[in-house]
Image (cartoon, rainbow, N blue to C red; front, top):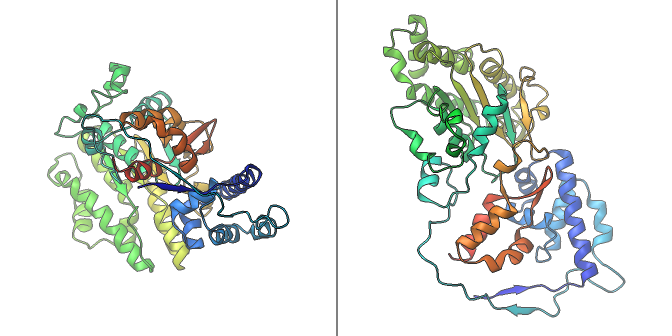
Length: 408
């Protein structure tokens, strides 16, 4: 199947790209996720990313909707025409480009599509090795780290990678790292593998229109994690009143105060049983807050989350390290007063820049692996990139979608 390409005058094409750059900069200055803007503008995320790249095949209406959301709709006065009588999105001189004949390749690993299970993706799919994130963390050892990136940048996969690496379990999980970059760093780093008990929580699927519904979801997620550590009820090292607390949580009889102290209490029990403080990992920490803001119960959810997070990540002497991921900076939630100890790593900084998203070299290697290295320039035109710190970084979800569209 051939793809039609819209041909623009160079001057007009340049103006459209500059408009996309202005939209992107405006979004980053406002610290708003692409997901939120897409929803408010009534378009898909892939369309929004195309707008940020200045893609000509996106309708003018979609551009207008995004400008309105960003309160930049005054720009509409100047983007409809280039010069008198020259429409920006004309459809003259459309040419057909035949796909380059793809060279025959051996059977390849499948393209990972929406997989956040580290063990599965690293052993069964094409995996872009991000395990040196572990090395850099061990070198720096911040107590609590927050990684903020737009949707689709591999946050959940990296959080699961950290869990699999650090968590002490009956399974020998070192097999998932022995062929990775972190293992080549030597015993200095290998000794941390499987060393800690881990509390792992993901709030990415929390979504209800009422506070009661959201609270029930959060309670269930926390209860499931307590269930995962149910063996603590048989531990002789865990104090009896802590076991009573755990049983109350598991039986659905806990009050709001009990639930809000889940991280703190479970951390204490794990430290007593294992003899080492646990690591707490919270994926998509800000989803309940975003839902509260969207549906009118923000005050209730932010008060609860402030206690839950601060008691688990700041006022917790039983914590080894904490990791959080999300799309929003902690500074966006001024009411979260108990989290001023967090070191934030955003898309605009250089720390850990190589571990979220794909850089140009990784994209080139991936395209070459699938036998379409000659498509790299075309890929750049379609996908574009983010200026993250000092590098251009590509959204992994967009890369995977592009590869799937190639029908590999």
